[in-house]
Image (cartoon, rainbow, N blue to C red; front, side, top):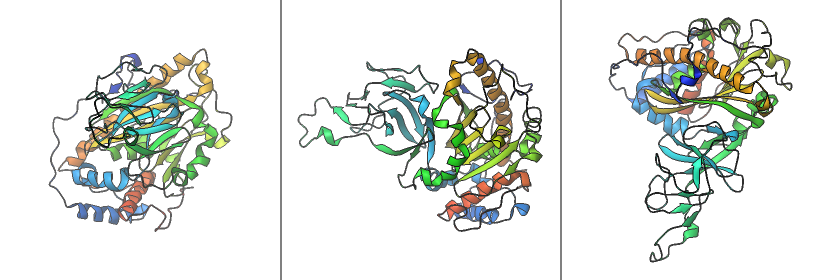
Length: 443
């Protein structure tokens, strides 16, 4: 079956840098909004989220533009949540690592010599230096060529801080600290890089920064049944791209989840294949959303583009795509032969870093036409994502404008309404459906 998209946004994949930007220039400035008390904004979120879907409207603009609201989200939504960082296929061997920054935390995700994947702080336990600053390398560390990933991925036998050459093993334990023999009571065995709570769920590596979240298996247990037939733990990341996004992280999450915009932004790409009016949202859950996007007609297989349909999928999942949001920001888009995974990291109220990836079954990587199919898929991913980048950039500018009005939501905006209910629940210290009745499925 073919998922080829007919679009006028053609660009050569080979010319696209790893970190991409929206095609049109960003506006020179945005109008500044007068600050509003955080308590007032949170009360507005609560009142808005309590509206039924047939009366629903958009949230106040401060939810997407205000520094104080972002700080509240970091403290009450993001740091307490499970945040997906990578897929295990990106660190296939002991010593493989990915360097990344998340919500101000310098991190390194590494597969240890014991084969356990951990998330460690990059902050040296001596004087607080970043043990992996930009451009720094040493004997025993090299770029990692085996897996798709960011420029910060590599392979190491150990980690060494450039400041005073303190070195740590792959599990974060201090191994050497030069000239510390006169430090009374210094115990090398007691020194360790901070380890963050980490869990692997169906092959994806999650971190919980505050260390207090309920087990991931209890939060995403329902998604296990939804995704098990794809066998994502055995897949490989085949495409990886980073995007510098001039918009709030929730603008992207809302756009990703609602199919209403197929009518406009994707009128020549997704709308003919998965019409907006045919999409529907499942029953509200405490920790995730699923939206079903049935095909208008079953596309004919195209051996030049498609991989074999995953044989273990239910017939329903072979005849549609689905989008998932595992709160707060785990974004998945399923196809009959592949998965798309997005990671969105807030960098400020008006800026985010987005990672877009595509995963395929490991078995297809040996196909003779694998490279050509990946090139075509990369072009497709670029094409439809540029459509999203343009509208999301426009939304963020509009949120600052004097002419901004809070609009009414369509029934096709139900995922946006559910995200509102999630934010309101987190402000109450709980999760959706735990202290309010669950919203019914649209079918």
